[in-house]
Image (cartoon, rainbow, N blue to C red; front, side):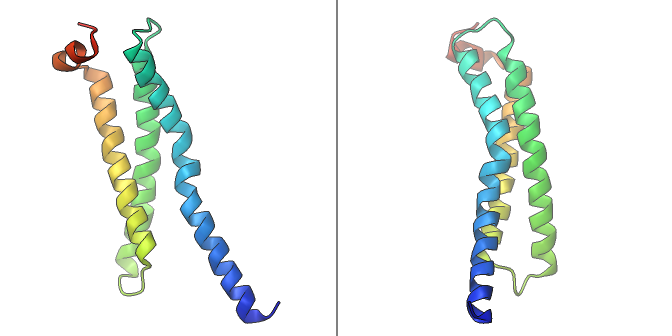
Length: 120
């Protein structure tokens, strides 16, 4: 393999790893949170809202950290920053906000939500 081909392969490998990182990092907390939501909807009496809160907190922590990393990098390298990294920064930001909303809803469980899912 020649040096130019090696550079292309390395760049492609880095891009694949960087784009698969969200799936790897966010899958475990998301599975815990979704399982908790399903158990809440099934009226499980084992406190599934705790699973939603813990999954949401983990999801928020990972997303916030990745948003911070990509945001700082975006700020420092504005003119040469790659487009897909900007999208990853926005993606992590949205996931962090959704996770924060899920933690709030699971922790407070408003009256309208209890009526909607048939608990109250």
